[in-house]
Length: 135
Image (cartoon, rainbow, N blue to C red):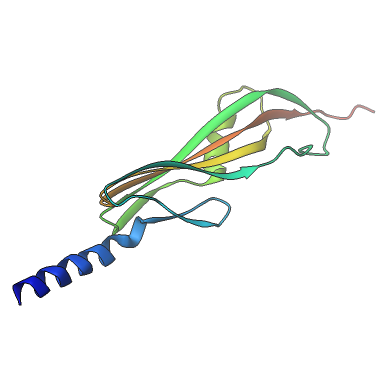
């Protein structure tokens, strides 16, 4: 009876702690976070080699920004791990930048025993400044 109770307790705890064990990427795809004991993985989310914007602009420089969210015990989650927050961080690297053309978004997951999970969104792209048309 003690053995069955122990197994049921472990199984219940495992199910309860699954709250942060899968990761929703900024593009909306859910990916498993990996190992139960430790996870340290990076998932590609978006890679865009397109032309960017059709609005007249000039490229200032390549930029990289991050945002992160944290989950504790699968019960409490906080932070802004979104692409918009990471883009704002990337744009803060350059003075006079109006926008960013996103070229790549990666989601990095670190987890220890699924008790503490940290998800970091990395945004890489080109900081741009819109050019004003002269008449």
